[in-house]
View 1: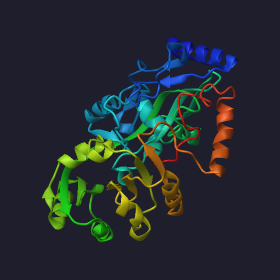
View 2: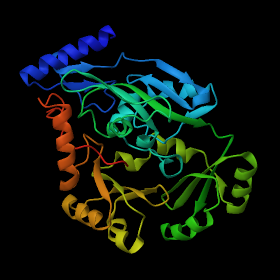
View 3: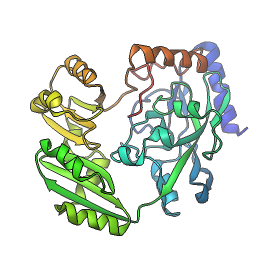
View 4: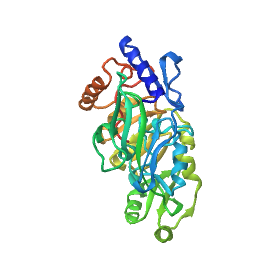
Length: 351
């Protein structure tokens, strides 16, 4: 066993015996782990590619590896991750991406972070080294437990290694802007059914489309749709640089699909709104009372979370009970399960 892992395991075992909490820290890009060294399990230097065979369409990296480093390694081989992750900060690590589980603008088309996880190696709340899943699709032992770590915010213990699916990079890309009101969304979705789409958002009176794929298909779709070329929107959107992301209160709301009549009260009273995922994700800046908004979102079949996120979103009681039992099994002494340095207590649903 690597000396670093041995040291972390010993610290976790000591904390477990004393029933003390530890804060898992990578690059701390969310600023949530402001604790003393004695209270911190620092994985920020735990970086590097463990195994990568482009032909297998899978890569294994240590959890402290910056997400941008992973992207550069894959780019050299003409590949990208087989998912869309939300790059909330330039220094985010692969472990942080998986632990928070937030998906990026291409999630409906490229897949979610949880679906890209093939396997993990981790330490539980007793300092035991556990391995779930594998490094290729055909090795699926413990597959669901590997994916369970996605969106868990470290509640089951620190992730040490992560195996992710990869896919070939797109050959061609076009960015289009179409000026139209939001209520044109259903019609636009119909027009885009056969398009090589990897992004559909609406903000400040304009639809923004990203087309990626083979050059001929992308070019044909762009000519049929028309509109103006606009590369600036997506760069600012994927790095959360538009003005809406600086407003408060701000909520991230995931819906089965945007229903205009149901959602109209939110949209009419909002200070600002950005619609993503072709109408399934709302970034909503509103002064509506949170309890009222949450009730309406739940009635629409969705869920919401205040932004910036400071911990995982609460689950319905039935699912929370299952998570509680899993947390008890992974971390009986509450080293990570009862972590006082994060606000919420339950694993995040895939979003």
